[in-house]
Length: 208
Image 1 (cartoon, rainbow, N blue to C red):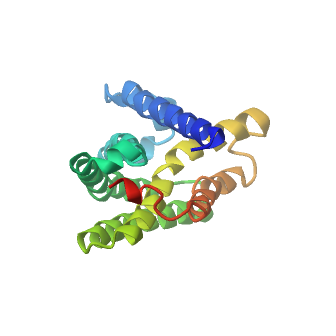
Image 2: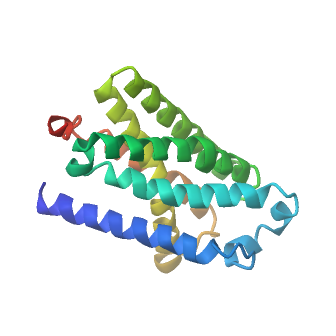
């Protein structure tokens, strides 16, 4: 692995840990007085939003960490550990994070474009994750790896979304200016998917 790739990996892991631990620290007390939730009071009053919210944020935090370690040669070559983390990832996406995201998407109030972006992203996330699970069950390892990469690229959108929100806030006019949030919504996951298509096929295969 090149020095640049190693540094990018460390950088990604740093932000995953920060996001995951920050999420647990901020919301583990189940209080609803955070800045984000202050804009969702109408959604909260329906009784549907908060269960979905907690399923999504806690599920996503766990699967981000579990999925990241699957890129390690040591983890990939340890079949019991690789399978355990894989099952945790798939279960977390299909039964917690993605269903929660679908419900949260119904309460987005930033326009049809933003709604469409998150709906498409979440649907692809489910499709790629389920496909990856079915492919590995059928012994199609290379195809499984490709699908899991695509799935994780969409999971990693949780990191890139917050990065672009910060970037637009610090360097631009904030997320509420014109179509900035629409741009951020698509920018958080479309480049991720394009990037994983450039990665060579299953470089860890020889380590099994």
